[in-house]
Each structure stands twice: as structure tokens, then as C-alpha cells.
Length: 252
Image 1 (tube, helix red, strand yellow):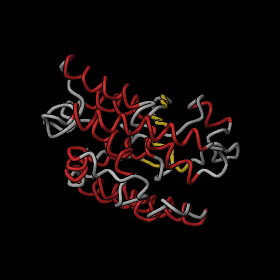
Image 2 (cartoon, helix red, strand yellow; image 1 turned 30 degrees about the horizontal axis):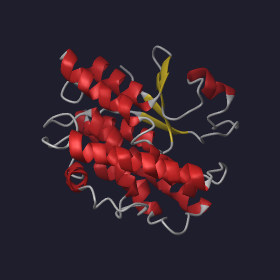
Image 3 (tube, one colour; image 1 turned 135 degrees about the horizontal axis):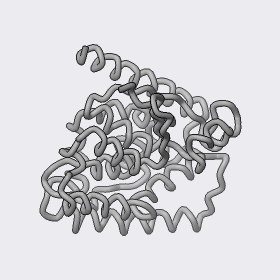
Image 4 (tube, helix red, strand yellow; image 1 turned 120 degrees about the horizontal axis):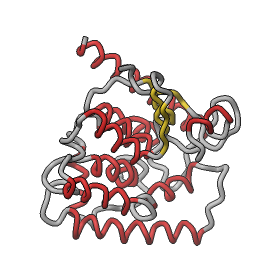
């Protein structure tokens, strides 16, 4: 089986969730940079890319052997787990699997609002009104409270005491707001959530997928320049390429 191809940008939150899964399982893959929202040759609105993912979003998975392609990070992660037997991260038991699925559905328009807060500072091609930004922060705070008081009330991870793809999806969203990276929101008011973020730092693949965020740094008061964003993605690609090369060599 040929390694899957992943299209996206290293800085993108849903892209990082998929990459983290692959890095964690040491699954070789090819990564191709795609510029979101652009109609050019390497853009997500180009006809060739839309043929693979009609929504024109990132990430997108492609299997070169069959021509199969799939958009949406959570669909990609569940597909990878099912087809490769990664039941430690996506349980085979229907009830346990349903609990992971429930979080992944909850994630949208809730925890996902973290990325809207980041996008308002980095996507100068889009318009985010003050009302939209305030609403995103309100929805995210509600979601963070639910993670803190419910999902993490009696377990080490979001769905029980074992790591799952729910944790990958949530961590790339929540963690980006912390003082370690963009510093957009003080998360200390959510103690269980903060402790969980610390635990996630020891999960294999964490450093590689968070490298672009480290490069960009604090953007709470001043947005990053185009050059900073470009450099973070280019350097992030190098980190990914080196990581894949290393574990691919070990597999051989």
C-alpha cells in the first residue's frame, strides 16, 4: 500500500489533527502544501483540487493507488483508523466508538471556535466583525467549560482514560490559544483542561505538529506578518518531512 497523500498547510488546525494521528502511529505519508481559498495551481479553489475535495477545504486525503479522496479532518481520521485497525485510538466497540464520534460532532461550532479567534488575527483576506469575534469567544468559553466540567471530570482523556482521536482534534484547537503559542486566551480558569493540555505534550507527534505555532508565537496584540506565516509553514513542512523520513527508515 502506497503512503497516503495529505493536502493542507502545517499551520492549519484540522490539518495538524490528521498529521498528529499519522505521526503518532508512525504511518508514512506524503504532504503537499495547498493555499486555502486561492484559485491558483496550488490553491484549494483550483479545479484540480476541487475534483478531490469539492468543498475546497483543507485537509484532504488522497490514496494514489485507488484515486480515493476524502475531505474533512474527522472523517479522514476515522477512515484511517478503521482501514488500518488503529482501534487503540478509535475503538472497535460500537458504544465506545459512538462516544468518540459524539465528541467529534460536538467539536464543530463549539471547540472549533478557537480557530475563528485565531483566523481573525491571521486571515487578512477575510472579514471578522467585532460581533463575530465576541460570539466565537463566548461559544468557545462555553465549550471549554464543558470539557473541563464534563469530559475531563473523572478521566485523564476526553473519552475515558485512553488517548483517542478526540484528544488530537481538541488539543490542536484548544492548545493554540494558550500562552505557549498565540496567547489569545487565558486558559487557567479551566484547571482540568489545563492539566490535560500538559499531558498531551508527552504524546508522540506533539512537538512536530505544534512547531508552526511555536514559530508564529504570541499574536494577542499584534498579528503575524505574511512572511512569518509563510516561514512557519515552510519550516513546518521541513519538520514533517524529516520526521516521516526518520520513522520510514526505521520501518525498513
